[in-house]
Image (tube, rainbow, N blue to C red):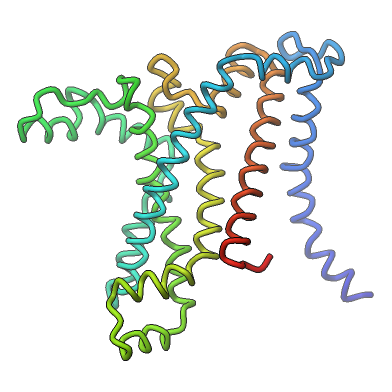
Length: 289
């Protein structure tokens, strides 16, 4: 009994912080969505009114479409890049630690700083990217952040650049967990590098891949700082995502109820997507819960 109390005493600070900074705000946010508001003043119970307005408003579905485009791009590109980087680190020998440092460095940088830096790189007239393109003969270089057709993907690429190194660490850990004897057996049997990769490495990395996919999906749906810094939702709302829509409803239009309703919709949507992804991986690859 004393040992159990001792264990609980160690957990108490973490539980208090979790409750105060996560559970209580989550409950209050859900509660706000069921009330009418005038600015920051609550004016009575509204039932599902805010949710009905949110679901009938086309801005929700437009923002959700942008989220799906971003998440699809980031999931594919970032996962492939992270896996390639992990293989380079795993086979890097003495240079592995240096590779880890350079690949992981972008995630340490402030997202706001990254947004400002890439806004300069993307600048249509002064940016280095377009300067290089014009130098090689591309006269009509793209307007990366002011063209509605490519602005969302331009921001998505910055997300990939910043977070690929973080996802790489999961794959490095997965590669290190694979017994070396399996790779030696493949060499003895005469298997090619591609056969070893597709028949041994990839299947054994599925649990790590599942975790990386879920975390990347959640992170992509919650993107806000890059959008705020680089495009502010423009041009013509082409980069407006759910998190930015929540921000505008709450702090630009003072619609606290609608912002809270949108937050709950985003929370439920991410919970559903994450559950479906875990169910898919668990059944397809017979992963243990």
